[in-house]
Every structure is written in structure tokens, then in C-alpha cells.
Length: 338
Ligand code: HEM
Image (cartoon, rainbow, N blue to C red; front, side, top):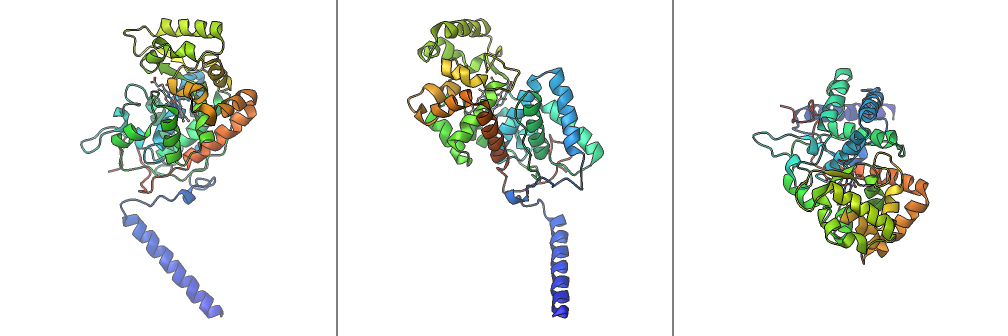
């Protein structure tokens, strides 16, 4: 029996060695969601969490909007091929970056901050921590640093060797889309209606460009959805100051009228008032299909803890969308390894 155990053990060891050897010659490792764990870097890069936190701390103190940039980058990463750092890739002769996608061009920011964090992490543990993981940890820290909830971030993602501007154009929701389409886009990613409302609650921080809300403020929808005419009139006048009927496309206004630099539940109050800046945000409370979502908006306004819990759960769920193609640990988040 003992000899049999020894033999089995040796065979298993040989098989493991063969697999490891084969793995080193494979173009990329397979990406299995179950490879994500909380302890993935505990031996290979035990300080990664501290490095990301301290860099994010400096960046958010310098400009709280950095928190919004990073949270949104993680979302745009995960909705295209899974959370694989594809959003971070620059153009090369053989690759067109997702940065050109309709919802991302002239809009996504925070890439230099990701580079800076990556540089620090590489200095400490070269070639170990993927850009996709770094972004997932940074998005959690971003949330926490502006007053939002904490959650443990499962890690072990790999960085893609490809990007897809076409998938970015088809899969990332737009502010013009109706609630049915928005819900469908989240369901396609394995995210529920509750996940969607909670995750869109991240619009409690950050800004939108005029081009994304002009139709809503000049089309009359804004006051049509109003539950409090005087407050909405005031908000509407301020939005029109920022966003003229012609020109000023890149002028920005807070997505949360009350507190755009703080992660709180005030964004949901704007929706209750009918004063959501983006049409897609207001759809969750005022469209004819909003019977699916308005009670969740009500709940998050009444119970900030419920919002924080569902947001944290939603971010973990979104972060678990992996790219089945697998990948590598990029040295530079903007380019695949050569
Ligand atoms: C219904 C789905 C969503 C739509 C239609 C949508 C749309 C938008 C738009 C149009 C902007 C303004 C961009 C600009 O003007 O340049 C924006 C900003 C933002 N979005 Fe979303 N979004 C959605 C879901 C999400 C999710 C799930 C997250 C994160 C979990 C997120 C995080 C953010 C953040 C933090 C900002 C502010 C960024 C900044 O200040 O630059 N969004 N979103």
C-alpha cells in the first residue's frame, strides 16, 4: 500500500512538473474564474495592497475625481472580454485600443495613474501582479477613499493579449439606451437588475460631459420627470449654465448634484427628484419599465447601508468576469509583453 502511495505520489509530481514545463511554453495561461483568491499574492507580492492604497491615497487627496476615473476604468475593463486590463492597451501596429470606443474616447481618464501604480508595484515585485488585478484593487481603494464601502478583492486575473474596440462599442451601455437594453447588457454579463442599480450608484462620484446630457436638459425630459419642480428648475438652470444648447461639449457637471466628490447615496435622491443628469440614470426611476428598478432606488435612498453592501457585492461579481482566453502578466499596462 505504502509503495503504491509512493508511486502515485511520484507520478502526480511528474505530471505536475510536465504541466508546469508545458505551461512555460504555452503562449498564454488559461483563465479560470476559480483561480481568483484573496491570498493569490500573499507569498509573491505581499505588499501589493499597501502600495496600491498609498498611491491611491495620494492621488485622491490631490484630486478626488481620480477615484471616479479608476472606478469607471475597472467597469469598462470588465465589460469588454472580462476584467483583463484590455482597456489599458494603447494602439500598436497590430492592435486598436478600446480607448477609441464611442463611450471611452475623449472620456476615460486615469491611465497615467494606473501607470504610476504599476511602476511602484513592478519595482517591488517584478512581473507578478497583473494590470487587471491592480485596477480591481485600485477601484476598491478609490471607493473607500471617497467615503464608500470596503470589500476584499479576489485576485489572480491575467492581462489580455488582445483588445476589442468592437466589443467595447457593443457591450458598454450608453446614456441614450432605454432601461430594457441597459438591463439586458448587465444580464449578459451575469449581473442582475439589483447589481445594475447598485453599480450605477457609483455615479454618486464623478462628472459627465455636456454632450452626454444635452438632449435631456433641452429636450424637456428633465422637468417632465420632476417630482419637485423648484429644486429641479434650479438644477436644470445650473446644468444649462454648464452646457449650452450649442458648443461646450466637453464642459462637465457632477453626476450627483448634491455631492459629486463623496461616495454616498445622494445620487439616488436626485433620481427620486427626477433630476438625474444622464437619461440612463433617470430611466431607473421614471421610465415605464422602472417598476423593475424604482423600488431598489427607493431602498438605496432610504438605507445607505443596503446600497453599500449591494455595491460591494456587485463590484466583486463584476470583478469575477474573467477572460476565458487567459493571458499574461504585463510588464507595462499599455502594451502586451514582447
Ligand atoms: C447603465 C450603465 C451606465 C451608463 C449608461 C453609464 C454612462 C456614463 C457616462 C455617459 C458617463 C460620463 C462620461 C463622460 O461624459 O465623459 C459616466 C461616468 C461615470 N461612470 Fe458610468 N455608466 C454606466 C454604468 C457605470 C458603472 C457600472 C460604473 C462603475 C461600477 C460607472 C462608473 C462611472 C463613473 C465613476 C463615472 C464618472 C467618471 C468621471 O468623473 O470621469 N458607470 N458613465
